[in-house]
Length: 173
Image (cartoon, rainbow, N blue to C red; front, side, top):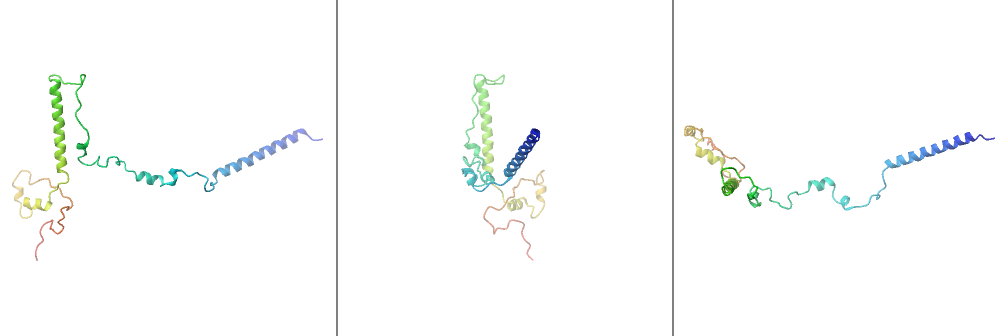
């Protein structure tokens, strides 16, 4: 006569073994590489790699010159109009305050334009050096209380005179 408890335990062991085998097959197949062609082709992964697309972005594409020096003149910038509930300092009228605000804005714009006009204009250092007289004597020190100090910008020679001597004269032997 067969014992019903032993049959039950054998059946239970077989279920556990089958579950372990199935679990190990699933776990190993999850980490196995997928066969070629398993992923669908999309417009994103058929073009350039992600970092190439990011680094080749031109963030100024809509307005190429928006960050150039002097681009402020192209922007629509104006002094705001004073409304009925706008702040007006005590002691002056709304018209006087609007006039002073406009004068300050005009002064700021004129100063900006003055700086834009100076942009990219450089003085030749050799000419500055010779005019000051430092190539021959030290009289330039006695002429003013600034000891001859003057702002001189030295940059690369963009004049196109590459054959022109730019620094102190050479001694003849």
